[in-house]
Image (tube, rainbow, N blue to C red; front, side, top):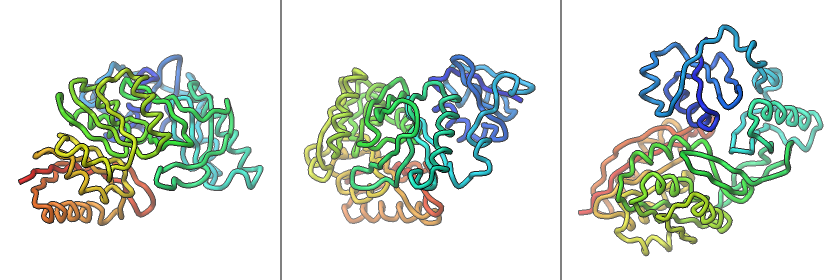
Length: 347
């Protein structure tokens, strides 16, 4: 069995890359040892791995990973209880488990949640708190409720990504670690000396990571949720970035203050971002690139979204080019979240 050995701080980002490129060996288990994480990989050329991973790593062959660490995983423990533990997310010091049923209604489910928490804290020593989702994301602020399960009773996440750190209350602000690949992608897409508008900026991950990678650029970061806005302001200070201007308020009202400003526009509000095509056009320079995130039916989402963008361009008398698209993640059985990069060219 072959493993890739990397430092723990890179684990979340590297795992996503391995999965995206179909290198992660799903028939084996990852494990920790001291300050390193070992991910099982398929037998591919090391030079190929170097092309997609830009951090130091080594490959290790182990005949039996059980001799290094016990195979203690949620998959093994809950293989007969698939209706209980659905998935989990790691946000630095906090793990969020997704239990299919309300854990407060049955002691059996609650005991399974506590067991899951102990497993996660064993696998990931940096996890100090485990909480469970208690309903779907809802409201204009995209927040949800949580149940405390185990560990230190705390809801303030400290999450690291791309040499940045973000602190926020998971109950009061939306944040998704599953967008880390997208944030890395946009860091590469944005050029130095650019003007960027990030709509629906949340606690600031897109804005701050772009700002840190491109200190010569100027970023306007707009957020409507007061709690998320205040966390973003704190995160700007925490990461010592000087080129992000946080703005509290509604994009519909604020866009006119950024008229013809942006070279790049980021719109990470997949549920309703298509309602803000006017605002993207308003803030765009004569030529600008928009990255827009959208939910939609798997079979139709690309065509429907592109048609709507092209219809908006025709109505407002500007040209548009579709530059890039990809599935960001499955959202439900019938829906995906996608991103489309398109170009605005004003006539």
